[in-house]
Length: 400
Image 1 (tube, rainbow, N blue to C red):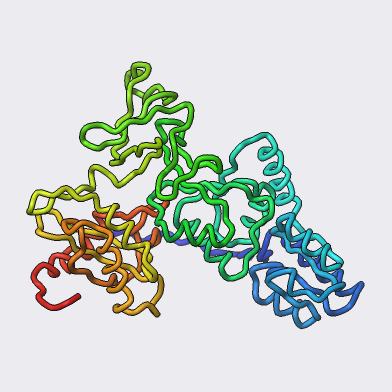
Image 2 (cartoon, rainbow, N blue to C red):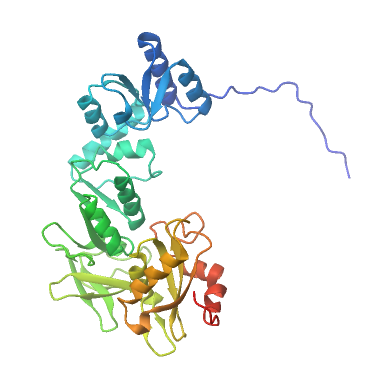
């Protein structure tokens, strides 16, 4: 083998890292200037930069970092970080007589202006970002009259209110959909003062098909069909939708006008025209006794119980259903989970009741691949990881 040619390196130029963007650099300089001009203490809402060394240096100079403006003594100076804040924060600061210095990055301010503009024009703004991040909260606060959430995000919002987060006074409508919503979560949202309305939609129907409204609301339903959509339930229980839908998929022939979309969802329509979605047709399992069971129906009853975060029910070809259950946290005991499942069973017919169950060794989440991005169970993956333990429940003669 021929020797590999080498080239001597005469000089290495190492770039000096900035550590953060120009907007954050500007905000740090703002705090430093405030300390120079006014002296300590200078209060800063949230970390001015996610760099502990910079935060420690500013703290040593007399900056005091707080989570909320309500922690700042009346009449003191507070700096708002580069990530920006919602209008409600400015209102709270004014009510407390705080002297404010706004160090919001100009690019963030531009995003806020665009959010206000599109909200004023009647658009629904979809925000993609890390839940709880200051920049996300600040931008959402610019157009808080209505928001659209999946159930998992609604749960986080309700939990935030329950520990003290203030609901913007202008928030009038919170639409939730994309996955089944437990009645317990809807009740918690109502107690928290959140105007939550469950809905149902399909991409093929330009999204929303049914929606509860302040004038027509039935808890546990997804509302009545909107004017552009017509909904019926087929003989096999599948929800069928027609009306203003898309023309077809790229590369396929156009669909005939008025042709129905088979949604793949099981449902029913009550005597008042409210639509109830029970589960996915493809997820239905048939017990060894010939009973068809939509697992989402059973799971919805289970996750309504205190201490239960997620549940997946299994029972294809078996005499009864079993389940794997995730608790809301480690402090929830197995006895509490057992009481919850017993309560759920009391609301179900005998053929759909969960006779045995096991506690999940890990939470179901998007990060570990057990939930979709909108909070639905990845059933195949859950079965791949935990199916053997679920099957073992049918051979276990001890109590769960």
